[in-house]
Image 1 (tube, rainbow, N blue to C red):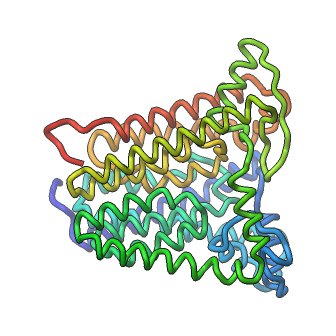
Image 2: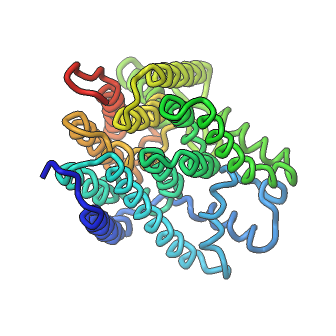
Length: 404
């Protein structure tokens, strides 16, 4: 059971995990219909129908997301289906993206030479994550960039450096967070194949990203800039670690807080939340810089690459001033790739964070927003603290007897 599986064994494990994911996805619909949902699909449908009817995104209508997200919105809108029809198509598309992410995980594990025991842990875990996280996975497009980012990591582990940067460019064009992986990818290729190959691979990634952005920048530079500006200047979202800490102070000491809706989310308003959000952003930048520098000085190791990639995304999620429930999807195909006891501990923490998220979202979300409900506030704080623990597990120094 410690020898790497054959290609047939790896493919069989991936197919079984994909089937488990599909079953979990189907079962989740029963829970979703029973408890209601907070959907983003109406907004997605408006974007998709605008494109189908010949309108130009960012110029003729505002788009909150980067251009690489548009395929996820437009494909279900072809033929102008009803609202229910659009939701069903989008649901199926995200199911396919989730299965694609599992395929990318299997490819990464194969490139890492993972043994069958590791496969039997990582892939089935990913297969049940829809049930762990809950209905939010059905109405958000985040499995699209998550699958692309994981495919990029798998390609890099397999030695397909240029392909990996091209995929990473598409992923970053769909959602910005994969950008945190770029310095890790560059350092890995540089150490393994030299500065020239690292520069070529990075150039390919930048060209792919430019090919996606430039047409929209040319047609609507103001609209694209406004979309970027709105994301960068978002206030402290109510589910973030900073907000959870302030709400805890509200319950313990009566700290006055105020909620405002803007930038597509509910946020804490005022000078103190703004300062806490700025501090969180500074922590994210400092944490990422520390991870990048540490990895650049490490000996070449694919296992270390996988672990630090998961850690970088987790730092971005845990300390950022926005922590929407769908951000948890970004971690699903990355954390289970970490090997050994560290990987098992990280997976357990991720499962706990997913379950804690489902306990309050979406059913109890408005109790948090309108009144800072004690139960909901405690769950959000607990989830955010568990994510801090996950960061700690991923970055904890390796023992001298192991590498990666």
